[in-house]
Image 1 (spheres, one colour):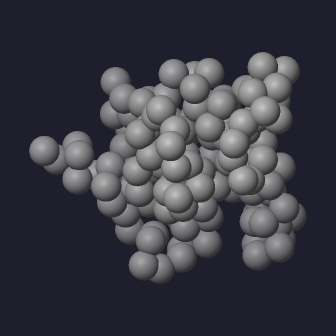
Image 2 (cartoon, rainbow, N blue to C red):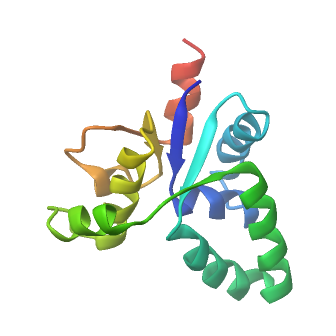
Length: 138
């Protein structure tokens, strides 16, 4: 079974129904929900998602949404090793470094994001939801 770590933008595309990204993100979410794939979110993603979702949906709906997300996704830990590696990395964005090293720690096959350029030069495949679907259909 393939293991994927999903970026925050992937989740926002689904729960805020952002077009034109919603359909491919929702399809991938369904594959994770149906246990065709093992899906992870970085632990750091949950407080960030709460903040962003609560601005759009309100506190109560944001909490309920995170509860649904947590049922589907496992949590990739942010521990001392992840932080230490992130601090000395060449990433421009610290949050991207933390997500990357969390993905490495859970042995993810790839990172799913729409911001592929944020992960230039990494050792894990970085794919958009559309690219991931295309690979599965080959």
